Length: 439
RNA sequence: GCCCUGGUGGUGUAGGGGCUAUCAUGCGGGCCUGUCGAGCCCGCGACUCGGGUUCAAAUCCCGGCCAGGGCGCCA
Image (cartoon, rainbow, N blue to C red; front, side):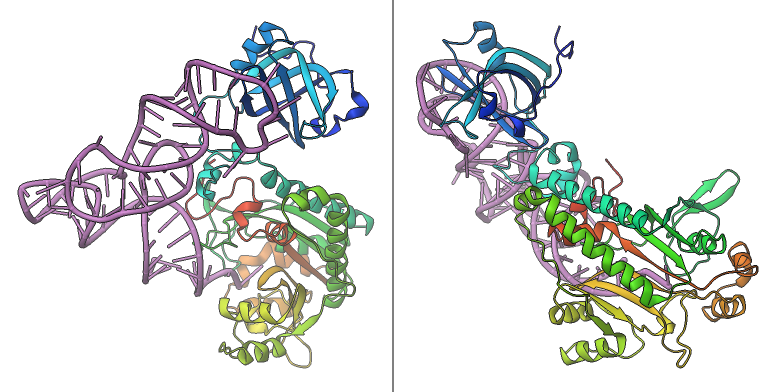
């Protein structure tokens, strides 16, 4: 009967088949990448997660039944092949498998909706419609191997620095945080929203005495942006730490990114090679550019910018031209930062907010937070918001809130930097943008 | 949301008022014992949708939808 594994189990991944195994019988499992039938000899490339191995069937030397089965193969079908490893200078990795038994586990329909061998390239839209096939390409799966390593390093880093991993709700009641548009949803008889950020919750956690927390989770923004670096659902790496200020958490962020770069360079060399991307590890801390100086730099590049304005796209590009790699932008004007950002004591028009940039791409933003109840209420009102709407948040500031600071990193944007891709859709398995809601 | 460009076989494209709609890849069939972007032969398969102009529209015009690029928005 076709399609059942039965007692068969894979003995080797393709990358582990080498001449040490010659004359040994092994079982490989994977997808048919290519079939080259020369009549008297048939070559089949079987692909698994990390590579490919050639199966060679000289039609007069292998069983007729096997030849018949191979001639029934269709590209991208799933097969299990039992066979003997043979050394051959003519085979792609110097070894090939002479099949002795074959199972076709699942036939792929034809024609395929796109070509995983990339003889004919497909556009991102076509690729995303058939993402499962797209991901069979090594240059695509490599992006997600790197992303996985990044997330692992980040988790390890936080655990090594005595952070507690938390989960905050994504179903939220309030649309009053200001700024970003939220996705409204029906919550029984009420209206609710998808969370735009764990910001208020991780701050409440500072009042819990948990001291240092982090969360890696999806956030949702209902903005109608349509660019290469925005999505409506993204993964945010968030942290918040008590008894720290902006300078402290900038150091933590710098160290974390540094560790991510080191680990990826060390552990993902194959993936980086496939992507033809190199990772440079800066020798010292990332440079710090004060907002005041950024305004000057942008203007000196011929892009008009007044003090107090947020960076326009042209401004980001002008800065990105000047600064190579990662850098911090600090001392942002209070006016364009949210209510929970601590103003500078000497000059309240400036704040203790910072961004981490990579060239012209914003990767992270963070700040020392306001921990004083009265000041927080004042700042909420100043932003034109109603403090009553923040009751459950403000309550945490009335009974012992320590000074604290934190930041959030866009995990998908960071992955763009790590993989050298220029479209955020490339770094998200199933991206959600202005129009795409499937798959 | 705005501006620009576009939508042709499964995929990626050429063409651009009337002719069998180009090419590659693919798919189906055939030949071939060392392929590795295999090769050769035969065949299959397409003009985004709606309206308009015209004797005639895939081609021109208007609108919708969708896509690519840029911008805005992004506490």
